[in-house]
Figure 1 (tube, rainbow, N blue to C red):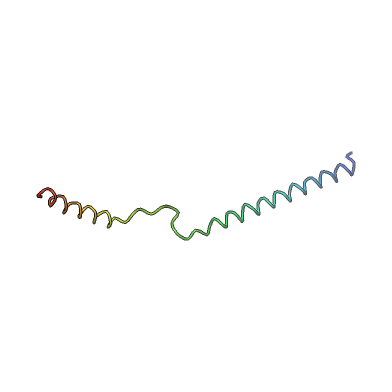
Figure 2: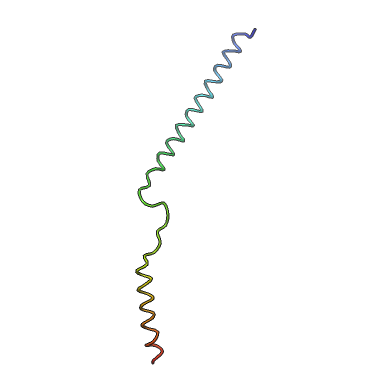
Length: 69
């Protein structure tokens, strides 16, 4: 038969472990919820294709004029 102090010690240790585990879970939940605040896209957007098309058109119109001179 186990003695009362041994059972008491085991209960105290388990309560401390439970307290630490619950605090850790609370911390993880708070960190997870704070990460959900992103309102925009989670990636870097590509450059607009209209700028690339304008540059290509400008380069195409300048090339023949430069070759003619």
